[in-house]
Amino acid sequence: MLERLKEVPILGSLLSRPLLAAMIAFVVIIAAFGAVSVSQYSTPDLPDTRETADWLTVHYVSMDNNLDAFGEWQADLNSLEKVGSSPESQHIALYDGDEDGDTVVQYVLEGGVEETPSDQMDQGWGAEMNLGDPETLAAFTIWAATEYPAENICLVLNNHGGGWFGICWDDTDDDYLTPGEVAEALEAVEYALGRQVNVVLTYACLMASTEFAYEISGHADYLIGSETFSWGSEVLGPDEYLIGNYPFDAIWGPVKDNPEMSPKEFAIHVVDAFQMYGPWNAPDMYVFRDYSSDTVSAIDLNAIPALVLAVDKLGLELERSVTSVGKTISHSQLINRVIGSPQEPEQYCTESFSGQPDYIGQGTFVNYDLLDFVEQLDKCDIRGLCEDSTLDEVRAAAGAAILAERHGTDESLGHHVDAHGLSIWLPYRSTEYRDSYETTAFAQDTSWDEFLKAVNIL
Image 1 (cartoon, rainbow, N blue to C red):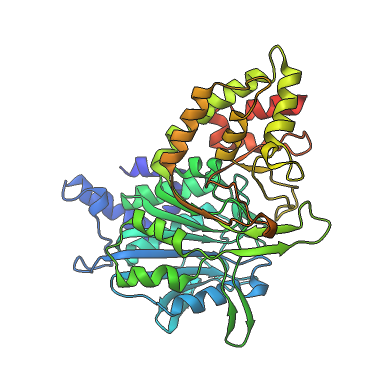
Image 2: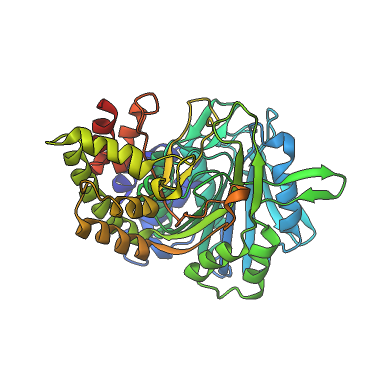
């Protein structure tokens, strides 16, 4: 079993950490004697009589970037302290701000917080931790779930987000988590604990993407996120706060009152508690000035593989349309009648997101609503770009994957009125295509990147 654990990339390196090494060694010894399975272990330094909570929420607070100046976590923490922890619902946070050596572990109480510098919590962690490192994400989640065992685990990733590109930028270490690294961390957690994280809540922009959902599927049950930008919290003055899209008291208060809430019920509940903001009036230099933080969705990750199979079939048919006989007409129809532009009539425009430069200046992420793309394809009356049955397969699979979603209904306020809950990357200009997309599991396992490259050739 130890060799099997070492095969997991992150766990192999984590074995050098004293606490985790002892934990895993204990699992191996007990399993060898057939006493318990991996999912039933207790660490040597925790008594077997320790109570198991219904819920543990692990807050991974990566504020080592420009968000810290707004006091985003301080505002969110104030909101969370209105609820605090209970024996049934507990909150533990790893917070890293924009100063050197300011990483702390926080146990959230009602009306306060117990705070310990990270290097005092575990000798292998150091006073300044890199939250853009998947080893940090895995180590802290495993530690938290071991110290505070619970039936259900919610992992909150709180930071900038870039959809398929990544999440959790750490400026001090010039690092961030790619979707693949998030998946590796979740896999390490799964091997160490013998169970998956139940809910991944991404308090970040653009993370309700098909690509990110596919990357972490198999290592968590539900994903919560937004197709567009997320509105973060701010400290406006002494005891004055602007709470963003995710009001922590409204989200976790009902969990504290009803700790038997299932992960599925919790995911849907977060969608209901989501606060919408808009419009966000961006500077003139940005592509679209009026933007609203108005979309949220809860995704059943167990249904994502079936959706990806359907999208793979769609990608094959679309690639064939833009590379075979009549390809010029097909390409023109795809660009002008399906993708379209927000400046065109609605019937020639797929709902799009993120017309802004991303956090690290890589240019625009070109994300479109997957189901609205299907609807626009269905309207084609010049030359069919794909089979109607394929569109029906994507609709059915997406319907099974999207548990709940909400979006604004006023287009004049920048709301995304044709959002359905999951985005997909669709750059149709060669200047927007990124070769790094091909490193994602979604691109490697489907025909989508081949379709995109075929579109960009013309």
